Image (tube, rainbow, N blue to C red; front, side):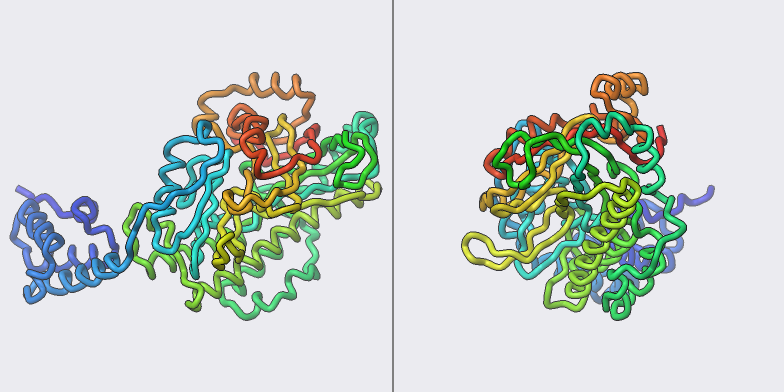
Length: 467
């Protein structure tokens, strides 16, 4: 009868989660206990991982025991303690997002945090999570789409222009925006972003130069968009310094594309190996700012944020040129980023805003709803309890998979018709019903931002439908 083979998943199930140690244990137990049953091998492996000190001198399993002791010693150097954090709009936030934030707050480098009303479960830090750390930065606390941002241009054209030129405006969006893998063939490489020394001095960044060249001016998939709409200014004393009226505007949402994603994943993997945290919080591994890798990530992250801004500027410049209409005002803001700031008590910290908008006193921002719900131009109120932050949008109520299962194309068509919105691209995973009610979200953060004016989407372009 053929012996049942011991597999890697068997070792992982009993606690051998670190790949190098698991591989070594598989090799040694296979050689040293060649004629032993699978059950007996597992029993030996369980004993070694439970009391590795008893096996240091073992002729077969000694090397595994030593590595296990080193691994356990590294984990034991960190003290995880519960810390409180502020939650805005708690009733509308799922428990799994709150639990993720609790885990992040327990990290030894965490000193303060807050959860925004659009929060939902993410990977590592929840979307809508704000986390302040001392002398450390968490790549997955920033996220994959580094520097994802909003950018709004208000043009010298009124509501009637949009109604009379819808066909032309649809063509302008289609001709001057690209999504996903599609990029512009005539991209110019003289953008000032490519003169930055990081492209020469950091090996990873140098290797990503061609990717950055090819994707500049394009937008990602998912919830990223380019849309024409109307900004309604009702207050004669508005901070935009524009006369009361309804203006044509362009709103874009996108980030640092594959360039930022590669930076995020590379430095996350470095952090995971350096910190050796328990599996449940491994993706919240940090880099100390006095480490070379921490300094490299800081430079790379800031570059990716500026690259994301340059992408938006390319889109807005192309569209404005095609319109031939004067731009009156431009507002933009990052999310998915980390900033060096001071807390109210004077401590210097790194504030991670993963899906959260900076909202320092007087700071401009844009908080979008969905393809049929309004966005809001806001100014921050500088609330220290939220670490000077606010929501970055409505936030998902349904996962992408659940949205595809729950909604139909007919439902989407009816909603677009009712709200008088024309849609180019997008699948059911981005249907308006997949998002929380933006008005409820804004209500929950009245202490964080002041609304200056709403923006109503009318012609929306997203990545081509996949559902």
